[in-house]
Image (cartoon, rainbow, N blue to C red; front, side, top):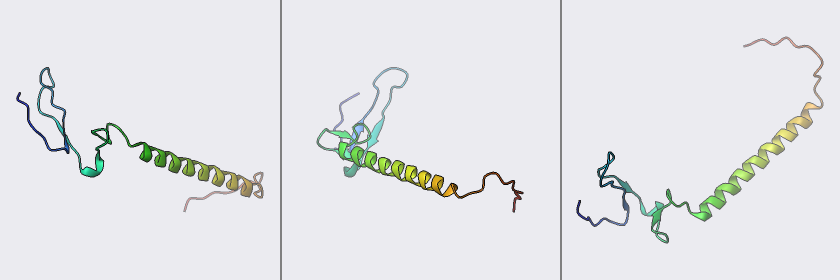
Length: 89
């Protein structure tokens, strides 16, 4: 196969021999392309994005823990020994 010049938003993942031989390309918009490393964010995630994602996950987890604790506190006022007749609507 001859060398082909591609635009900056295309990654050539072609396999030149073997059972998977053929042309395979990944296309990237400018937003998904990490110019600093010359790789897409799919291959090399942006550290700043990973930090923000981890921060959001920590916030979600802490909120869930606080909500569970608030529910447990509200449950202290419930009569858990009384039998109840439950009926589906």
